[in-house]
Amino acid sequence: MLNIGVLVSGGGTNLQAILDAIQSGQIPEAKIVKVISSKEGAYALTRAKNAGVDGVALVKKNFPSNEAYMDEMIRVLQQAKVDLVVLAGFMTVLSPKFIAAFPNRILNIHPSLIPSFCGVGYYGLKVHEAALQRGVKVTGATVHFVNEETDGGPIFLQKTVEVREDDTPQTLQQRVMEEAEWKILPEAIRLLSRGEAEVIDGKVRRVTRP
Ligand code: GAR
Image 1 (tube, rainbow, N blue to C red):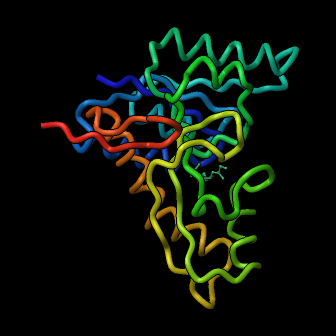
Image 2 (image 1 turned 45 degrees about the vertical axis):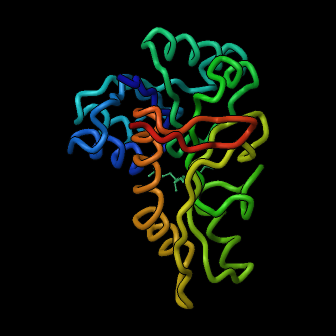
């Protein structure tokens, strides 16, 4: 069984997509054992509670330093015996110590086709504003492993979404979620739970199991 810890900051629709995939039997070999929100009162915590999953808000300003904040997150995840950390709309940059505590065991969902519209400053709606500003005709989402470079870790899965002439950042964000994010994030977890993918020499390789 793959024990998952999910880190969230907001509405938690990606968390919901994972919960639904587990609930419906699509990912029988994975279980969410902990949800951590960087914001008090995030709706994602309500989604966790409704699914009977243990959730907690850990807010940076309540800690004396970023180091103390990261140490507490590491402690909570390790205590829950988490094998895989999933960033599902988590808007806080992880420290090198946190990343080193879970080597090649942190996944992130990003709402563009990396390496477009990613890195420092590209998050949430800003990503879609930038895509529309540039006039791209195709965008999408990426699931990647997390390393010390923001949005720079090994790419796992990507899915494209067409941009429409009348798209606003909001309509594009919604379609990228529906058509790409909510599909590829559960799929990445399913593959990992079955041991069907691994990071080799900085790239994600698919492993075929008999
Ligand atoms: C999602 O679109 C996710 O890709 C994005 O934030 C949204 C969270 O929505 N993440 C980033 O921009 C990370 N750089 P959710 O809380 O409903 O899952």
